[in-house]
Amino acid sequence: MLDDAYAKRLQDKIQPENVATALVRASAFLTGYELVKTAVVDEVKGFFVQGFDQDGLIHSKDYERKVLPLGKNVYEASVNWLIQMGALTQDQAESLDAIRSHRHELAHELARFVVDPDADVSVDRLKKLQGIMRSLDRFWGGIDVDTNPDFDGVDVGRDNIVSGSGALLTYLLQIAGVEVTPDAAAG
Image 1 (cartoon, helix red, strand yellow):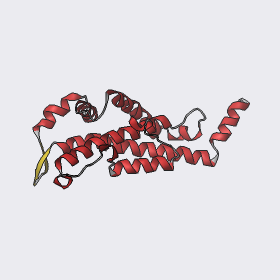
Image 2 (cartoon, one colour):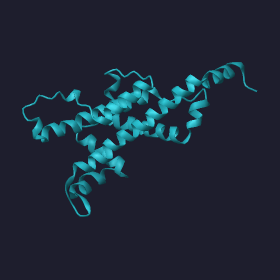
Image 3 (cartoon, helix red, strand yellow):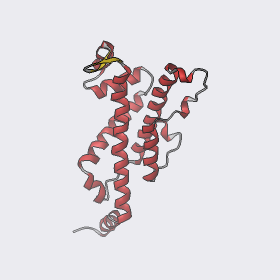
Image 4 (cartoon, one colour):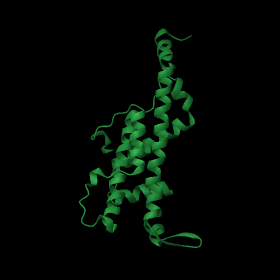
């Protein structure tokens, strides 16, 4: 039998507005994770593109020599390369581990986060996810500014660079009712 306090918390948790909030936050988290993962894995690999031929993109051998040995899988290797390049900090990489773990919980146990009064989508990790995306936006956007002649002579504030993925993540957090302060977004 449920004690009264737990029964009250359960009743509160399954109210339609609370279920909706949990689902929106879970969706924002799952989507945000995939956006960051793309900015990590695909952008790093894309950095090493040398051209293309009839079979597709041609990647520099440096990708295999300088990136892939840095981890046990492409994701980990790419994160470690981004740390070496100064795009991410070690703390952000550790946050990504916790974010990835929470992402797996959400993806595989979504119903628990909807009905269990003791299970909530981590707002703190959502904020860290956005901070990491901001760091990646500054890094990849900075490379674009440095290498694209369209930006020659243009003063671009790197802290203001936001990718489409970064803007989408911010929008999703707004919908989810998650306020991100500049300090929290630092990653």
